[in-house]
Length: 308
Image 1 (cartoon, rainbow, N blue to C red):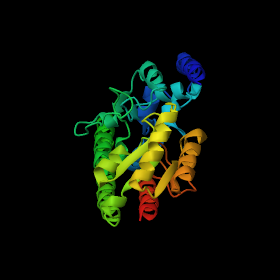
Image 2: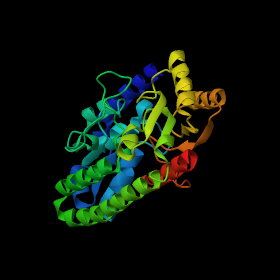
Image 3: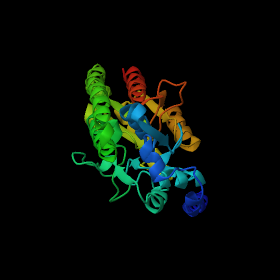
Image 4: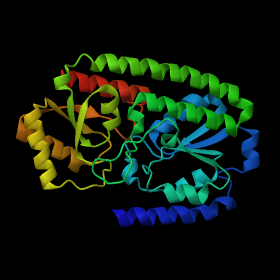
């Protein structure tokens, strides 16, 4: 799989040489006459940019709902999207490992902004990969508020003529984020502290746990590329028994192997599957997690119902 992703990445980078020959990405002059062209990596960031950009920005998302950014298979069109952008918004902290070279080699005239590397966000260290930062900052809504502020400023700097539009849209959105943050704290507080223990497929929820006082454990670490070891699974089974964990959770954007391990741990310990969480990707338009705010509400209701 790693070899195939590397090959895809090289093909995508090579495809950038063809962008200047066509008009699919649009010239800089063409774009200045119209809306700001924004390219985003993950589905959460695409949703953020569409809300803040509104009708004043043309937003394109590279990843589709359900795709795992840790192991994303680069497409040749990704290089074209990046080459035609005025602004590229990404998460950073090595989340988009397979896209990094595509962005570096093709964002010639675009500003690239890594939202998770914003001042005020203190990355957690991976519990399994020494020296690696945990990139899942968006699960702390106070950090996601900083994502929104940084995106607002980047949009305004890229298109000063529409800066007031971006600021108004961001003000409304940030108010919703603040309200949701307060709601999450209130919902989690309905679960007795001794029951606030959750086990997931991969370690995407440490920021959530730190922000809302929940102990979080996972089958594998921050990257879904990691292979679970038998001793790790045995350790997790013992932890579930010792702490009396009531429910384990599977995730929508991880591979079936990890979710199957969660099911096996539940079966071996007598715990139950508490539901399905959205972690590294939003859901499709027909799901309750089609937006970032919807994803948070769905996850919190699922977690609280299972732990209570």
